[in-house]
Length: 186
Image (cartoon, rainbow, N blue to C red; front, side, top):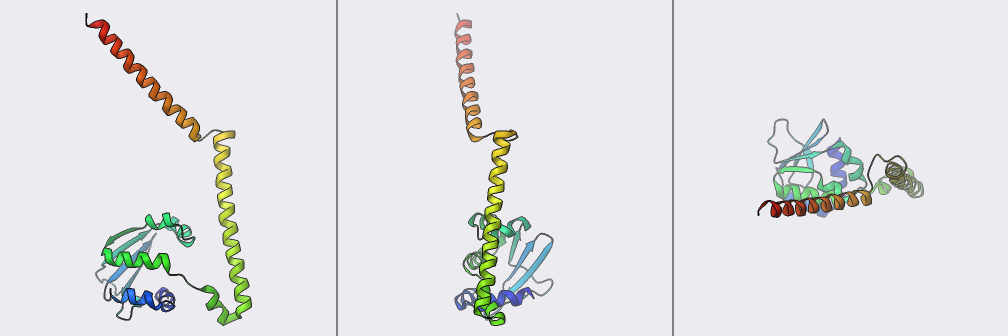
């Protein structure tokens, strides 16, 4: 089932299939939490479920907590994906993951028509944007509350002031130590 979806997205971009075709016969396993999906690249540039027990050229580990950030196409999230094995294949998969996207509106328009598909996808995007904005505002509000109202977290200014105070105290102790050393010598 998941290979069909991946192939559907790949077929929408022939250049993506061309890029993968160079890696025909290689197998990549994707570990997302407890679930593992393994695919083998075919000579056509499509993927097929890997044969059980097949040697894996690339192991990709994705934390389930990264999935929302990856769905939002956050660049920092891509850097947190762990990849081990064939780095050429890893580079291609990383490139395709960042640059290849599913045109849901096009697929949906075949089922419900262009106008309905456009409105459904626009509504879904607006909802996604609202959730993202609301999450950011909640996090900012919580951070402000915890730093200003009920100080559980120190603000950057307070931390910097503390660090400077510690540095000044350390310098003063060193000066005092040198003075004591000079007094003890004669």
